Image (cartoon, rainbow, N blue to C red):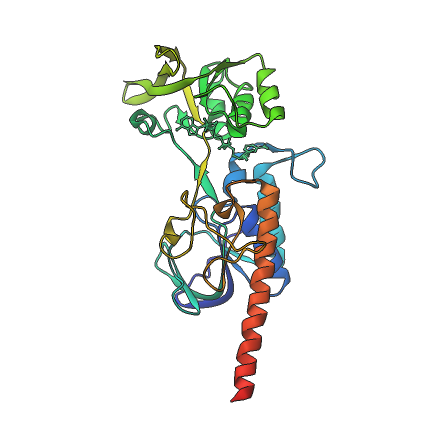
Length: 332
Ligand code: NAP
C-alpha cells in the first residue's frame, strides 16, 4: 500500500477529501485529473466498507465480479496516478466557521483548505446487548468475510432481514455447518433476488418473529467464546436457547458524521443533508458524498457517482471564488 505522510502543520490545500471508500477515491480521482492535488484522509478503514466484502458482482465494468479489497486498491491507484495523495490518519476536528476551512488530524496536525469533500461513509450497527460487547471478537462479529473462516464446520447465527443479512448468511454457508438467520418479523427488507438465494440455500434455517435476548458464552483458560443465544419469539413469547459458535450482527449501518455535529445539517439519523441535485452542504465549500449522505441507495456505484459529483462541485466552487477574488482585485 502506498503511504505518503506529508501531514506537516498548517498545510494549505485546494481540496481535502475525508474518507476513502468508493465516494472519496472517486472524488480524489476527479479532482486529481482537474489538477487540484487532492489529499485523501483515509481514516481507520482505508478503502471503506468494500474492504470487508468478498465478491462485488454489481460494480459496472467487471463482467465476472471483483473482490471488494481489490476494487478499492485499483480505485486508490487510479486516484494516485493523477496526483492524489493519501494520509492514513483520522480527522478528529473540523472548523468550518471561516474561510479557509480548518481540519485537524489525530496527531494534531492542522490543515487549511479551500474545499472539503466529506466521504466518511457509514459503520455497522449493533443490537446493543451487553453480551454483544463482551464477546466482540470472541465469536461476535459484523463481518462474515473477515471472520467466517473461524467457524468452519460450526453453527452460526446471523441477525437481520436486509440484503446484508442475506449476503452474510449465504457467505457463511461456505464455512459453517448450519446458519440460523434470526429476524424480528416476517417481512424482509432484503431484495427478492437475495432473499430467494438465501431461502434456496439448504444450510440456512430462517427463525422469524424472533429477537435475541442475550448471547451466551463461556470463559475457559482465560479465553472467551460464544456457545449460543437466548432468543424470544415475539408472537408467542416463548423463550428458547440456540446453540452456535459464531454470532453475526447484520442489521444495517449508521453514518460516520459525529465530528460534524452542530456544524453541518443532518437528518434525525445523522445522515448529512445535501442540496437537491448537488453535493453541497449548508456550508460553502464543503461537499458530502457516498453513504454519509445517502440512507437510501447505499451502493458502491452510487457512492462513486456522488464522489464524482462532489469533485465537480468543488472544482466549480473554486473557479467561482477565484473569479470573485480576481474581480474584487480588478475593482480596487
Ligand atoms: P437494512 O436494509 O436497513 O436492513 C436492516 C435489517 O436489520 C432489517 O431487516 C431490520 O429489521 C433489522 N434490524 C435493524 N435493527 C435491528 C435490531 N436492533 N435488532 C434486530 N434486527 C434489527 O440494512 P442492510 O441489510 O445493511 O442494507 C442496507 C443497504 O445496503 C440496502 O439498500 C441494501 O440493498 C444494500 N446492500 C446491498 C447488497 C448487495 O446488493 N450486494 C448487499 C448488502 C447491502 P426491520 O426490517 O424489522 O426493520
